Image (cartoon, rainbow, N blue to C red; front, side, top):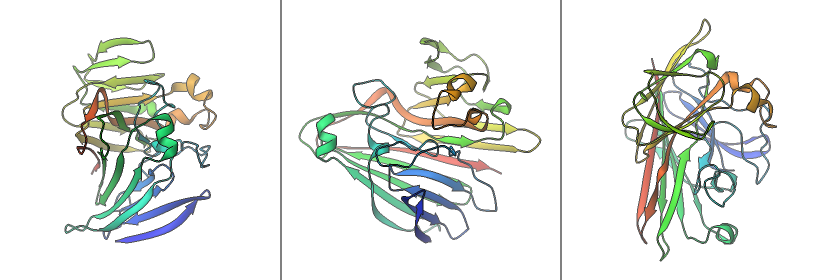
Length: 286
């Protein structure tokens, strides 16, 4: 395994490379994965907005933001919590027996987090990289005396050539909350297409979700699996909302779709000295 320190738009980052050539880049700001290139010469799989800021306290737009301890505006904290805006620490890195490269980043409470969320916590983000897959394992421990409740998500922006050519399988028959119109619904179609703004939280999704991209320049299938997490979020801002996002180009919605593993509908509750783990596996299907 090769682990290289670098600067990305002035932000400290780590380039992780497995023996088979698979690569990923993660910034210490936010514990934020911003790039993933599977082995075998496959191209970039994650979307990163060219207008994203990288300043301290500012969320990076794209890649895989860590959402913790609040999802969206469902609570009193800043949108999507504070983990994606905090400085994480490199805890360890190495090779696994199967040749996968692994790096572990950590974040814990301090005076600033306790001022807005009065709980002790210890987060770890474990990246495991090899071949055609990237595993992200988010672990939370409660070292404090009081019970801890939180929501969490890995807000994954997948790069696509044309969002209008995307179809998403694995969600048929699943109930979801549609944040666009505020209604609770059940998906009837076998495959979800991206037409206009899409903002859905699917509760208690079992099995894998597969994203298919079919166009003249791009024909891929990406699979998203999870354990520990229970929900799936599908998001694309569509043209109108995207035009209002300062850190996205007006046509950015065309080249991304978010498929994120999450715990939202039923937040995690941890007693003192307990821990929780949520794993998301991204796999490029050859």
